[in-house]
Length: 153
Image (cartoon, rainbow, N blue to C red; front, side):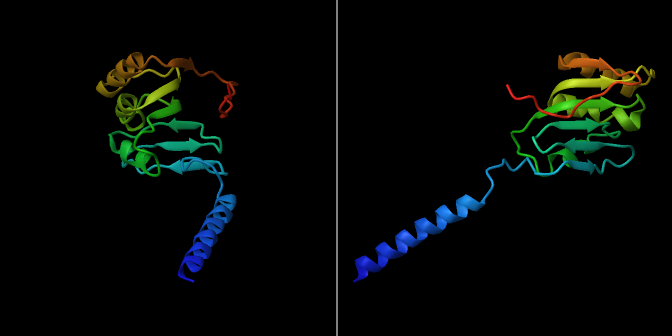
C-alpha cells in the first residue's frame, strides 16, 4: 500500500508541475509585457532608462556620478552588460558625468549625441569614453526618428 501511495503522490506532483509550467510565461526576467520607463535616482542630474517588451534598452543621460550604475543594476542580471542605445541630451556634467562609468561597464551598440559642445573635464572624459566604445555614433538632427525595437535575425 505504501508503494502505491508514493507512486500516486509522485504522479500528482509531476502533473502539478506540468500544469504550473503551462501557465508560467517563458519570458526572461529582464523582459516584460509592457514598455518600462524608469526615472533613475542619480542624485544631481537626469537619467531615464527605457526598456521595450522585447528587451530593447535605451539610456537617456546618466547623472553626474557613478550612482547611475546602482540604479541600472536593479532588476538586471549581473551578466547583462549590454545597452542598445545611449543618448546624451547635452554635455553638462549632471547629464554625462555618469555616462563615462556606464560606457566602461556596459557594451553600447549606438550612441546618440547632439551637436552641443562644452569644454569641461566631464565632457572630455565622456568624449574619450565614446571614442573607446567602438559604438555607432549618431549625431541627432531635428526630425530624426528612432524605433525602439530589436530586429530579429
